[in-house]
Length: 319
Image 1 (spheres, rainbow, N blue to C red):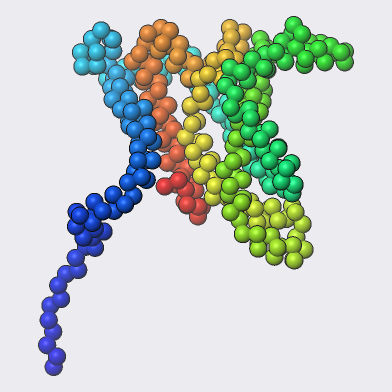
Image 2: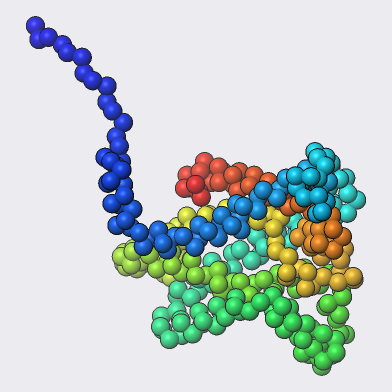
């Protein structure tokens, strides 16, 4: 009978046999790490290091006392946030604008990318791409200024056309009912072209043989888009959608603030502009920090929730 001998327990596999091998690999890829350094420094300096300041959301912060000398008040500012009379209206305004971004703006770059992909002439394709990208490089100040010139009642081209065709002029800037349409139109005009870049890159990676096989089976252009292009870029669409959901309460300050005035404040005031008013103009640093902390927590929860749902549906998700 063959004698049985005890086998040694398997040792965990080491990626590097020695520190010298690790150093060699680091040195071999040194330029990649050099290229990575600016991005890492950006996140460390502007994203991670400022998180230390979140402590003041739980304090009655006084600038002359500093973070270590200010009194600790716990959840006082969060309680104030949820009991503030104007908070519900501000939250609703924020969610409505976010909903418009998701339902109206988000599909437009996808549709635009599909349309650009159908252009066969290289000259026309690059020309239209350039024209669609250009507005992204304009600041919101320029975009809102151009809109102001176009819709003002004193010589604005849109009101002049309305008057020419016998309609009454509309005060777009002071009418609360026109704030949200103006907001989403400006977002589409500035960002839709830029948003097509990732989708066009994903479409370019599709195997041309799939389209040839579909044409041999008699599929037209619409069927090819529906059965080949859209399924191929579905993962990219879902990833960008998850990232977009993370900004549910973070619409950006500059754009809305430029459109905000005393006449449309009831529908235009959002969390970002409210933080500016409470934090910088009124000096309520702890309260405004608590609002920002609340925004971040909601965004994190939304990203994790949607990512988990996407994985249950068979998609890869963000992580």
